[in-house]
Image (cartoon, rainbow, N blue to C red; front, side, top):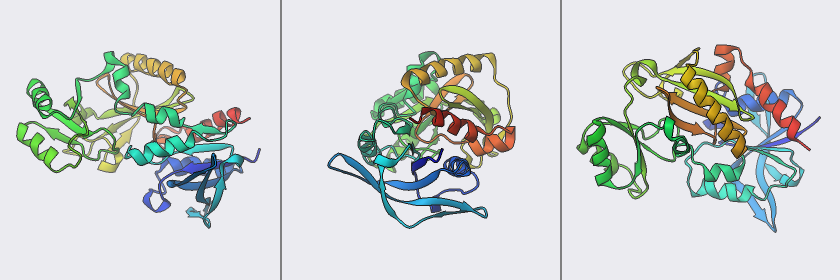
Length: 309
């Protein structure tokens, strides 16, 4: 079947062409004979209830990615849409999900735009209270200070960014003040969590779910002297096993994802605590293929092909 796929994504020149999961998925789609087009969210237009975007066809040849001449992409003729741009999860992002609500009913979209705007990934863990690390979400300075006094050392981070951006380890009130002073939008809540010291030596585990089922996992260790497990920050990956507690957690996540009809997700676990459920732009697929010889790109498209009417 020759399928047409549109990918809402960041510009090619902002991506790591060897490690990016979006391009990993696009490459598999091209190998299946799909027509694959890319556009950025600001290129979306809704005119007389008809959704279009300005974008170009993706091509991969001789290990080089190229995007074709910009053209009008009519969503009436598309089979699959992937929403793959990274946060910030701001009003521009939310507006794009409103526009994508006008996709034709026959179109398969991953992940569902309504679910994306209803379930920010750092808030989802609150649906799993028994797996939630000690956490505060607030813009109230006194609340933050009180939380720090209780747990002595915390991590503070923006609610709506990604990749370790804006994440800081805090062990004094003066550091809270400095953090807030150098950040705009002081009334937007931040998330604070008790610092989990095992992350320095053990890192965290990333589990990947496709079709609401656990499909692969790995361990991420921070760079020497650091605590961030994001690859953007120099973390490394290795194979690992799952504990009985982590297997139970993953089963509960599967139930949640299937109930919410979330097709693609990645979760982060430290000490059996669920820190994040990434549904905006889950990654790690190229690393899983290299490290564990698991090609989840094939599984990803196999599942979507069954859903195309």
